[in-house]
Length: 321
Image (cartoon, rainbow, N blue to C red; front, top):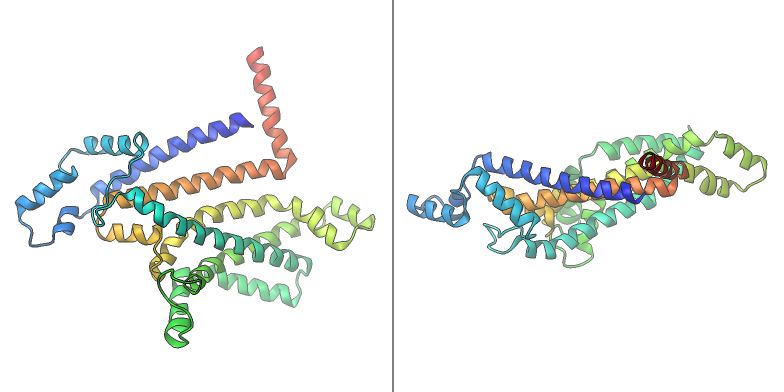
């Protein structure tokens, strides 16, 4: 098991370096001049050239790429923002906890509401409640979160004057971003749970438990749900990565001071250090989410854990032979 984790961690390093090279290459060839964006249209050619020289933009592609990889992965220095004139790492220290908090809250709400709702609909399959849920779930999955966010701003801020539409001053500032970020996740988790429970509801072990007189609640939550957790955990793992990345749109709509807003402002200003660092961090979160999901499979399903153990024992026998 530990060899598997070590191998996955090494692959995460390879993935991170690959993402860093890719995003650096894209930002290098994308149209736009950071010096022109920073100094304005009235700057002279000499001023623009001096500014590019100060930022190292006059170096060749390979030289800039080498410096970027060295600073990022050896010195752990993400550089200084062209627009904010502050170290990117300092901005991350203040913004990343807010983005993580928003993503985690949305993820917890997705699970706490979506899983019980999906179980309930599976136990009452084809009822009017189940059919109504399927319609609402389809609507929830189909509605773009940015469109929902704009509708909420128009209703709760402009019309009813109940909730603020930007900032993080009080708990009221978090209500609309959390709702906009959670709706689609609740619908997807509920649909995934419903499908997974329906696949196990007629299994032999469920029939045996019912024949032994086990209570319906225990049959559902001690027998059916644990055996249906594999696809549910997989969906939650995917939602973990997308919850962090998905806050980019939500933060932009509500002017939420997190990583998403920071990255969007960096894209607008051609702030290369900001954009490269934000994309790299989001990619790392996606890789970590995938690793945690795979490890959770082993703890949930003993059969998967046994595969890891048997594979390790087989490798030891081959090495000894």
